[in-house]
Amino acid sequence: MAKGKRGRVILIDAHSLIYRAFFALPPMSTSAGEVTNAVYGFTSMLAIVLASRPEFAVAAFDLAAPTFRSKEYEEYKAGRRAMPEDLKPQIEKVREVLTAFTIPIYGVPGFEADDVIGTFARIAEERGHAVTIVSGDLDCLQLVSESVEALVPRRGITDTFVYGPDQVRQRYGFEPSQLIDFKALRGDTSDNIPGVPGVGDKTAAKLVQDFGNVEALLARIDELPEGRLKTSLKANEDRVRLGKRMVTIVRDVPVELDLEKARWTRYDYDKAREVFDRMEFRQLLSRFPPPDQVPVQPSLAFEPAPAPGGLRVVDDPVEAASLLDGSDHVGVFMFTEGAGRAARVLGVGVSTDRNTFYAARPEAMDAVASTLADRTVSGHDAKETELAMRSLGGGKRDWDFSTFLAAYLLGAGSRDPRLEDLAKEFLDMTLVSSEQLLGTGRAARNPSTVAVEEAAEFAARRAEAILNLRPRLEAEMRNLGVDYLFHEIELPLAGVLADMESEGVAIDVPYLKDMQDELGGQLAAIEAEVTEVAGQKFNLSAP
Image 1 (spheres, rainbow, N blue to C red):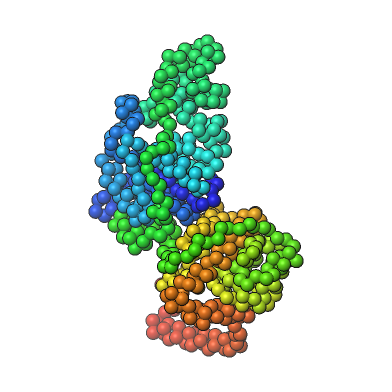
Image 2 (image 1 turned 30 degrees about the vertical axis):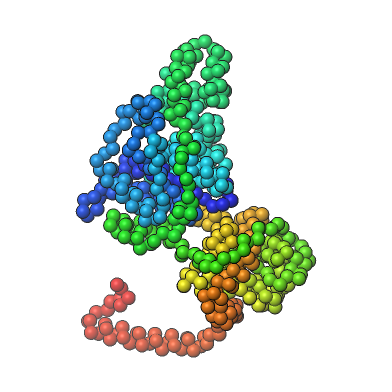
């Protein structure tokens, strides 16, 4: 997976995917006769891409205007078939789908979608984001790096493959950036780039491996042995240089990348449902992740949040306890596998006004839980955190704050306030999400397989965010007048619920058994009566 610390950016080459979907899928149409096979294929691909809940998504389209390539080389893409009539109206329908998911659409006159994507990939990479390019065209592989990967269909539209640097090297035998030299030598029939006569895949790859790029090859052409290859290269030097300009994706297109507008996870579900119903994609929307609740927005002005402090992993229980000494407020986040009473604690992220650390061993975790017994503690979901800490022993904690409950009250009923959204809105702090850490679907990994360093960064930074969110959310609740409800009802109730789940509820088993026998007898009598009236016996439970 491409590396990046500030969230994943998805860059969608819409035109290439639409074309691929149109020719990959059989004709489909609505009851009104509108053809939708390309839209359906594109949307199916989009569902695969968004399943892992990347933070940002952007789409790029080719425009009808001439590009700098076609102006320089009139034969560029000459010979391509005109767009099929059944495909033309589907382009606008794809735009409707993207708009329904609040995915911004870009197109720049004079440039192709590839160039816009190449520019955005560079900008996002420079900002520290991981990037996934989604395209039906292998030209995008020249953009692959440690931070940029490419997801392309192999067969049809939903059988996909992800290319990182290693996968490109394995397929071609050279670096991703050298694909432009390879294609300049070999040519590209799909774009009508002729290349060097007599140079195919193997020869082009060998030349790239030996010389690095076409400039070095042409400068050292006399080193080649006499023969048809040398003669052909000398006769087509200008064609090679032209080909390289044609296949090189531009990475400095005059366009701005606004990632705040690309936060697709806050889409309007009802609007998306309306679009899907109109196109008669009745089941397809269920493949997409549900939208996030709009996060709580700050209404007051605050001083900038403290910069993230140093982070250490602590194994020694004495050291873990000592790091809590003298702290008035403590933020805690539990890294667990499972939930509730069945949760298995893998580590404890802790943050105080002086220290941020991660207790990674059971002895250190026990020391944290015991030291925090009968002390005021802040967490995200206080009930779940308390249940996890009780599995470590050390009595009960006096929960002083819950960012989850505070956001619930401030957000007018938001059911699942995400800590990463709160950190972003109130602290301008980017936290790694659970989906980023663990993945989703079949590719998801168990928390127990996460490396200690990754778990520490995940849990301790969340504890740090909880500690810094507390005064800001407290002020917001006072301003809104819900602080009494928080401290007198919601937060105490979290402790009561934790007690109920921890201790369980007493059940009168003999009484329930008697009730079962009594109701069973009544049901048997009713069944006998029905059989008598019907004149035959049949299964009353059948639909």
